[in-house]
Image (cartoon, rainbow, N blue to C red; front, side, top):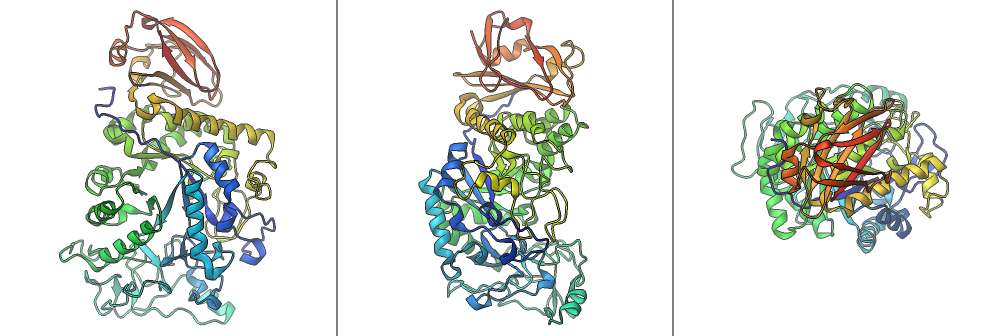
Length: 576
């Protein structure tokens, strides 16, 4: 079968991810391992109406504000009633936003006035909605900071670990897993505290690390700054205790409802596959009873769990990382094959593709323009076009991707790894050219950066303006063109497919080669014409509605003659 059998639904969200701490920072000091005061930090208020209007005009429907909830940091906010963290268990001066230290608070770094930090966040939510955008934030359910303690939780809330029996390794009444009789020793404890003559965290008994490492002495490459939450799965013997409902389930549901009550429209759930699917089924259904339009996105890296997390757990969308992202990346780096694209939809997500979130950059991934990836942001053209138009599911763009941010240099803990740091205070020089002193008009961009952004904006407009892409069926044409069936058609580098509804029919062709031009004929087989309700013997106009504007007239049975320069993409509307 070469076409989807399910009736598509309209899920074509365009999600724009912001790393909130970096987005509005205009400081240019960029001292390696610099403090907040040295390198500056972006604020909620920096995401002003001009920024939000720009994002809406760019074509986004949702903003994922990354790093909102309060997390461990080396910056001391004790004067504001916030418990300081042992720096030896904080990664970077700013700290990781995925080491949450208070689920009921926001990051004080992001506030102009720290005592008013929640009011400033609430104002950002209202401002975002007023500009026609919806709000997504992170929910980090698998682990918390080593020194988790809520300073502002509601009076009736039991804090995590507060009622734990620390004498036992596992109980479904406990929030954490324990190693009785052992003391936690972090990989940086001795060095840091010897150099700084400070007292270290005393964790006895040791808690199991966030990654699930059952050791009191996690190594430097582990998630040593976090501890794993207990959802009734016994990590020591693999058994489960979900009856009675584990304490953690109730506490995490309260947290989800707390943020939902604030007007948040969705949650991106960090490392969701490390939390039992039974919890998700229980919690998501209860949140949606009160907020039926709220969406849940799972960060997930196990294709074997996709079906259960959608149809059992209740997730709206899952990361398509181990699958489409990996296949496209290989193609962009000149060692992949378009056969992998067919394999992804046939074997991993073909009958629930509308539930897969597609992307080429996030805070976890290396920047396309970095030397660790393609060293050229324009290499993204065929891959972005494909992931945006292949199916009806949502797509995601990471801020700065649209102007080719490179992420070079050592910021601090992050190192020189091709990623924009999530651990350090920093200013992104390329991005600051777009911010342009808070005007968000791209006044400081180069002409090449402006053109790249225009490509992404045109892609967003294509996605949101096309009935076939929003709602249409998918038909893979590779099987009709490979193995010499179409002369000069390189099925490893060229990918063609149809998207169609009753109102619109599209032929989409992408050349992933960075170097080769192909002059070929794309064959549309008789069954494909039948699926679209078209006569294969008819004469049709194929008009590019995306970039080139080319027009081709041909008889359907004869195929579509086409010249494909390197990285060319055509979105050809079919009309009789």
